[in-house]
Length: 309
Image (tube, rainbow, N blue to C red; front, side):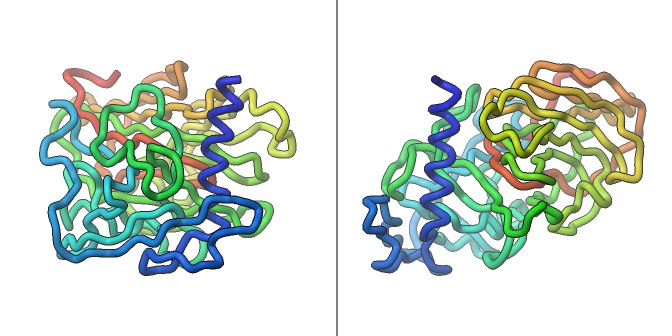
């Protein structure tokens, strides 16, 4: 029952967003409210002044980057070169918004634009193990009380996978990048976390990604079970070797994690509770992020105390 409830919560948010996500300026029209009683998106003003809702300290000492995808207590977040407060509402692209921590004009989300396939804000319940966030817990946008990100599919089977990236200067010590992922049950769809040296915003990982870890459904046509997911750990897009593959139980918010130690030049990864091994390689990525068609939450880059974990 918990599994079904969690899935329904995410789907409710995305379906409501798809049925009237508001205009580019964050406002909603009267047509956004359907006659079947679905909640309409509330009109959200976009102030250009006021205090930033982003945290001023890291949620934990070892956190280098954190994003909850919360839409803020007043449904606004800093974006653009000046950090003006702009409307953050369900179905708005995350492109241009400053990352939650450390938010700045040099640490803002790169993602495809508003039109077409893109990664967008959505509403859900907090992911398991998610750190507290002052951007979450607000219901003024008419949806659920925590944020997430989703990317929609347009053509079937899926052939294009939107990418969301953050500029990333790796530390001199070991670190990890992780996300909670849930791919949709559509042929060709996956959700992945990865490191890359390219700023391409469509199918980046699967074409030129340095290292990436994806989840997909082994049988996309089977929408009744949602019981298992197939993971794949790859390097150099799809041209490099497949380092690890297998299946894990689908718990809705499935944690994907890649770790790297620049001192020992060792990469390791895990999918859910499954450790995928350690692999020697040299990595010098310029971006970290996620890619695919489905849902994502709780993006974290963490400094590790010692070697790759």
